[in-house]
Amino acid sequence: MKKPLLVIAGPTASGKTDTAVAVAKALNGAVLSADSMQVYQEMDIGTAKPSMEERGGIDHYLLDEWPPTVSCNARMFQEKAKEYLEQIYAQGKLPIVAGGTGFYIQALVYDNDFAPTEEKGESERAQAILEAEGPEGLHRALMQVDPAYAAQIHANNVKRVLRALTYYYQTGEKMSAHNEEARQKPSPYDLLFVVLSMEREVLYDRINRRVDLMMEAGLLEEVEGLLKKGYDPSLTSMQGLGYKEFIPYFRGECTVEEAVEQLKQSTRRFAKRQLTWFRRQQDAHWVDMTGKTAGQAAEEIITLWNNR
Image (cartoon, rainbow, N blue to C red; front, side):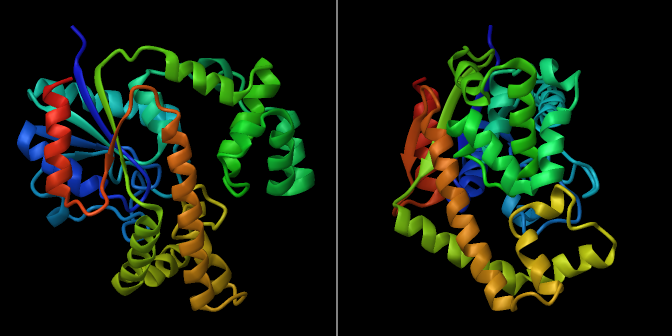
């Protein structure tokens, strides 16, 4: 018998956390965060990490797993998530994976194998391009061999671009083809995959408002505190949305207003890429959040779960 697993995915600011908590309360569930930034300690505001109040008494996992100095990847996430899944099943609860990092979700629900490139490490050829031409040159190299995958990644996401080029140079296979093959593979779980969406203008307004609320909550001070503790701006964690946009401000290269506007714009673009990723998900059930509360969306998802 396959073990049950519910995924609530979607773009940033689409209401995943509140909806997942509402579903968990109704189905005796626990939430596994699938967010590549919420795994980091000391990074709360910029990652939109749910507060204890927002968690609503529901157990949450994969928050605050590693210090900012650790470069988390999909393999690490997968291993830790599988450990937590067993704990949740042992408690007789339903695991609910909630987040927007598609590659991490895919790694877990389809049990991706990372062995082929993990054993060899990063490609010297790809590393040489990065050193000679920087992130933009690295992204151009990926665009030449795998335009479909390159279109999904921003050039500043050096880790993913480097990994994709490494995979191509070492296997001769495109990462986009590899991911598509993984999506076609049946999940080892009794899976329901839900994607939250909403009208673009509504989503973009929510993103802009979320950034304003982050600033009111002390995002600028959070970034400053991390820098004062000596965390290098080149760290994977510090290159995340909500953090890298403020580095130029602290270097005196832009105003805080310009940094905030850049964050809003980058987040909107990121949400667009997230939606592109999830549209490729086979057998996904889309729930339109436009005009809906988290409770209403939860009722719809519970019905889908019971009728799966």
